Image (cartoon, rainbow, N blue to C red; front, side):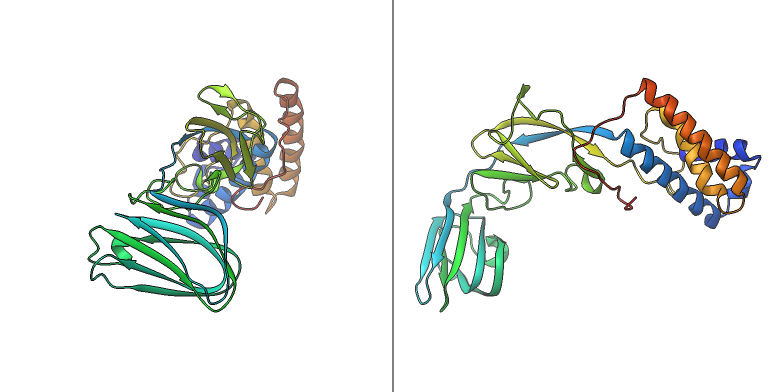
Length: 304
């Protein structure tokens, strides 16, 4: 069912004509009611999507995993050849210097009062114009004690996530809210097991989750599938003719709920009728469609 078809159904309930909602203001108001109704139903019967993660981390030419403590006044240097990108995390106050072999300019950066680890990502061809290969030196200096974590140097512009450079340790993060996966439509992980090359896995031995991020072991390469809950597409003036991702058994309930919100602005009696009908339809629906037990209470992209 499309947004426009929902509007037509609401008009049949209230004896209106769809032309009454043709102006942009009225249409935006109705779209908001539809989105709210779809969101409420989606909390009871959430949409799911199986996300495939191709987990083949790019191996660094050089890596120093874990935390290294830089003591005030000392110098810590890391070397590697033919590096195109590098990454590390820092916490504290200090300075790092990047130099390229030959007459390539030196890049010096200071960092101050970082109370938590912050990842620094560098593409050598941008940081060191004219660098065409040879040895790269990354040096940490400073008069204060600070921490350096997971220094990684790569011979490619791609890090573990294509087009990106990421320093990581034993666990590689994949944020399912990123544009590569579900973007802002991610709502949570379902209770179905994560699968690796078609085999069910168990947490926390094989993977870990936190927020919208799943962590996979660095050495366990392969294809992973993860089932997630997701928010429906938001309906607006530009996509009224798009199909709404919802089970056809729920369309009557969505029409009634949206109509309840629309008619609440001017016809309280009709709004109350739609509310009661919505509750009746949902109670009948729950007989044939058991509700989903979600691990957490979530909000959709508009906060409902």
